[in-house]
Image 1: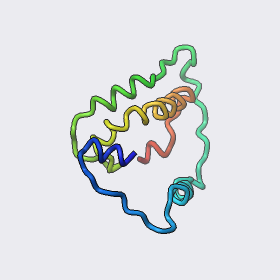
Image 2: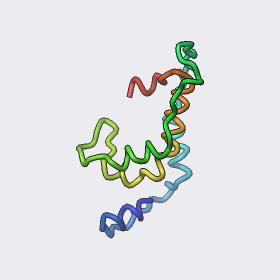
Image 3: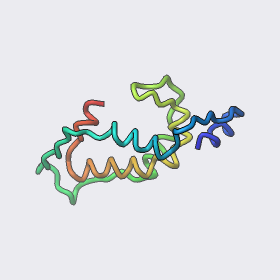
Image 4: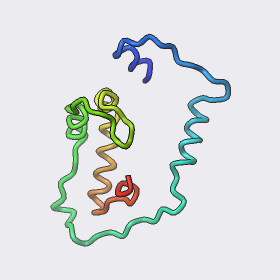
Length: 114
């Protein structure tokens, strides 16, 4: 993906390779630090009827990411150009996460803290 980013932005930097670090070691590392050992499943709310629920489509998420204006990075340190460029990739999993939250009528505690 970064090769594509460098191609689009016109940068010709070659990626630096470090012995012992590859995609698998990075995946294991981030999986270990992103696991919340104190996670508690939220209780389901009875205030929303599933029949009346409106879900988010992948297209809506894509358009929201694609229409972002260039701004300073937020607390997540993700730049606007990165989100716009990754919109085709990010839109499906984000829509699924949003819809899971809508279907369960809960907002995960991690989202509230973020």
